[in-house]
Length: 94
Image 1 (cartoon, helix red, strand yellow):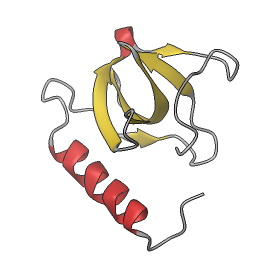
Image 2 (cartoon, one colour; image 1 turned 30 degrees about the horizontal axis):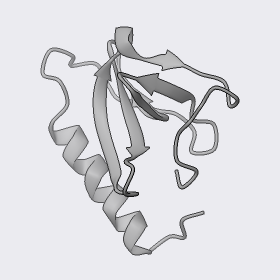
Image 3 (cartoon, rainbow, N blue to C red; image 1 turned 90 degrees about the vertical axis):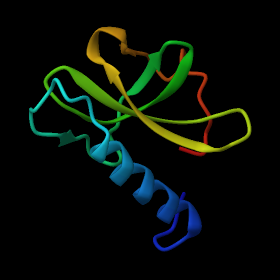
Image 4 (tube, helix red, strand yellow; image 1 turned 45 degrees about the horizontal axis):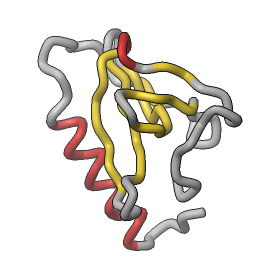
């Protein structure tokens, strides 16, 4: 669990700001957040992560790479697949 005010918390906050500034230009719909403790587990192009937010046609996905570095990026909704907890192979640090 990440505690408020930790370096990890700051890294995630800056990643979110950067993602919102660089959201796909072809979707002006409002960004809606999933509840922090109810984020869907997803699979997108070889990456297991969690859906953080969504718009009409895109999802904002968070994941940790093999070195443990945090990433946040947009994916088209057609490329996002929800997976069960048993199917999910993502990092437990999310």
